[in-house]
Length: 408
Length: 163
Ligand SMILES: Cc1ncc(COP(=O)(O)O)c(C=O)c1O
Image 1 (tube, rainbow over the protein chains, first blue to last red):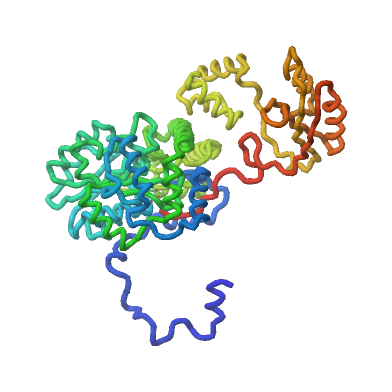
Image 2: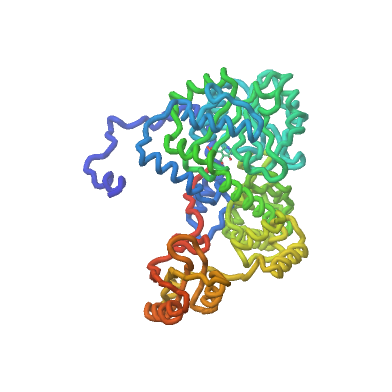
């Protein structure tokens, strides 16, 4: 029996006259009320009612978690390892994360006091922002960016300031754009490379070009590197591997994308000891610890997940080449995204707004993409296509998008 | 082996229908280069055949598959090769390998009925000179064939979420 049936069949109303809320007033906090509702909520609701949709809309790998990794999670449950872990996370996992970061990206973090295992990068973002942002502080948020950045800043009482990273800059942060937005109140810069939604990356020289500005203005840097493993040209450069930036950087990463573990909710937060111990206070009261079974699975991912990860990355790279070539062929100019699994073509030539384009493409051709403006003002005129679907579906999606453009 | 050839083979192994143009785009090679490489690998016998993985159960057609273990006395001059070669020529034998362990040759044999399979094994295989014994296991259910899980639909069911 469902909640509705129970409630409906109940003789007495659940809410009595006496207990009723005052309809003239909102009981929701100003902070919660200030977060704008997702502009594309309607669009996603519509999607759920439709059949035969090829969804390039969601940022999730289409692979199963490598089976060995799942087995490690299952084993931990069978063993009865289902209690809390230490707030910071399992020591073995922190050791492995530390080893991974130094050997893979040259970033050095002490597993004892510079790493916290989090409930995904999502929690890491909130932790990082709340740890360093005071009410009224300005936070430069790469624009376009992942949808949670500005709300996170607002919930901490900070003021998100878009830092434009347009297509003509290959979606990178340039020194000029950065200089232009820095004020006396600027505290933090939030970066995400490889980038969602654009697939852009920042090379070492790009980071070096902005590092002096960050140091000179005494800013902190938050680097969300959730897509670091999905780097297809050259290798990922972690800002904290630059000596001048290490002390000012909070590095966030996790298992969701590299090991296809989105539902496990596990990631990590790394920063110098002072920031980490402050963040740990928030983490211990809000989250206590990351899910225990997921931490055991993550240990297995770092120990033996390399082959599965490499297979996925190779597959994503091939799909990217196929999809981007397809988009360019049907007349949607698109930069070759060097990382993540998103293509971010301009749809300006069609004369439609990105929201119109996405809505009509969904209704008329059953292909779901996300309108670029959902990711910030610099995303206007673009659509985000996640190529985390099978090659067959990608081919079909290109065909349908092509037909849609022809029909305009 | 050349890295590009290895990549080509990996893709073909997962999808042999893929066109040369798409393969070229995926691997950053021209269509011509792909064609050249593939035909060289076909000529060299690296690529042997392009086939499909079929779940015959779903067709409703009656078919019986058996795994057959065969013990063989190797011949002094040819070892296992001559007898293996003779067995391999039967179209009923879908695969044949020499293995370590308590028997020597492992066969996958198919037929329309159990009787057809057992008649084939006793009449054509067990009776061969130098065969010391056979054990036939009738396949009850195939879970995985050439990397393809037959009892599971491919891909991941992703739950809708709003981002
Ligand atoms: C840039 C970015 N950061 C963070 C996340 C969330 O990651 P997690 O699953 O680790 O919370 C996503 C997920 O789409 C993302 O795109």
